[in-house]
Image (cartoon, rainbow, N blue to C red):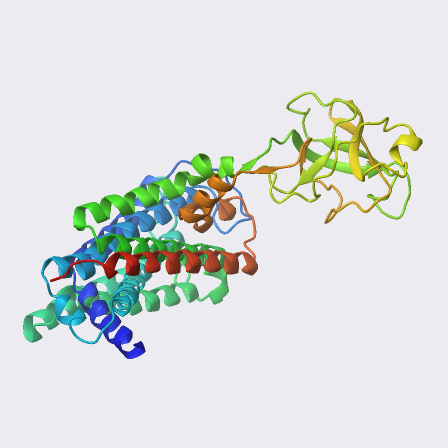
Length: 450
């Protein structure tokens, strides 16, 4: 079965990169990124601490969005040609009529289409990285980056000439040759631009390399591979137009899933953001029984806070995960040690006084309080535990959340993207891909191809 999958994947890959739409979308993406360097001069802040600053922030946002949309369209078109069209033309019958299982067909088709998508995304993302190197031309007085135009012209022009030459004299597929030549040619051009500055001077390679932007490009590639799995699954039952409609719908709804589903998965309301925490007594820890904390919020609470209200905290405005587990509501007098530290008092955190942005919080009860840590600056404050809506949570988990793959905001706001986060994003993408490929297998099992 492994050999069957690899054979189907290889044939699908070759057929996919021969599609004229691949050439059209790759060139359209490159042209749009090029035009973005001339049309994104809106001065979005001049900070030099992040990998992009000023107008280049908008260039990165628009450029990566252009690659995202082109990748989504490309996955729908290629998946339709590889699966739906072969089913309609009955050519897939020659495969399933042999001792080849239908799951092997779907898995092989996905791997082939995914390989073609990755090969097409490489030049798209390199167009973007080269565009970031050139930067935005905010005024007509800005100078062109001559090394960028020279190496970019040689890479694209050379790929076009080689593809035209081999097509005319040897009958090879133009789009296939162009893509196979363009990807490594652009990679070589980008590597040369890393060591050659704008004034034709040599520079250290890391001076022009953007590691965080490269990570964002990798995350975007995972998102397109998830959409490719969706396209392959849908194309086992639907035609080209409906496959594109469904992929576009999943793409758009994935961008809006936090609003429509995510905000209903965890039900809680933050009252404010913690600015600082100080201890009134010196005990073993800030969560020792009887310990009193002075919590200062950035702004006044969004609703009235009364003495006796519980105090919860966590790093997320949704209230999940919470840094302290739910506990029974305290009903006594928190100022009285007999009530607060009585043997029958359940452990918890209680607000003893609230004056504007300043809250006094006391640890009541002598039992163990299940908390991962004490409150800290940057935490969100709540007065009730978070309630989980299982239906909304399940729907939120099933729908591909495109925000997990969109890391532009972290880059433009100079937030470091740790490697561990990329591992979580990759695991999420793999789970989504496996799920949709399995759905495609189920849908194809009973599909009449005769």
